[in-house]
Image (cartoon, rainbow, N blue to C red):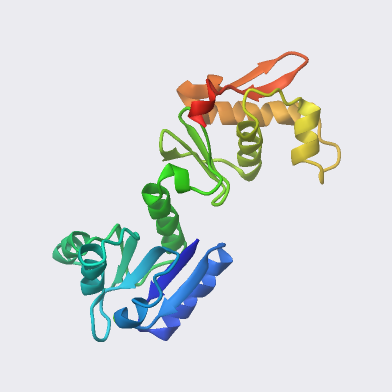
Length: 227
Ligand code: CA
């Protein structure tokens, strides 16, 4: 996914570009709104500074929405913090708003959240859905009824493996082969412990993960239309 960064301060542009690429995104950068207009192909999200020389960020957002009918999500970047500015940002078609100075972790979290919220399910690359559960391999996150689950790395991997293979038993040894192949001396009990933790996090939907003695674990997907 490509993120377009529109920002007149070269330092901020570079910091954003460097860190977003480190987080796995493609980036394009523009020092002005005018330059940004030529770079919109394949852009999944725009990080848009408000105070720009020439056309302002708000004006660019307005132009994209009203004159070009563009639905590319926009996150405004601004040093202005008053409530009025916030409202102007949203009425100009912003999907979110980040105040400078920002932490790069916050920017990446907001980018992920906006992309998740605004990308239609069919366009979400490689997402697996099973009832209330959706796995996003690209961001290595999972949501339950739209709320992100707080999963450890291994919990995520395990849930992803099960959801990729719905209604299919995966034995403990098979799961160990797939997920712990680089770790010696893993016992089958380790799988059970991770499953128990995931089930806790699934709360009332804990029964999505089923097990059967001698067969292993599987994730219950009612039918293919849920996928
Ligand atoms: Ca600026």
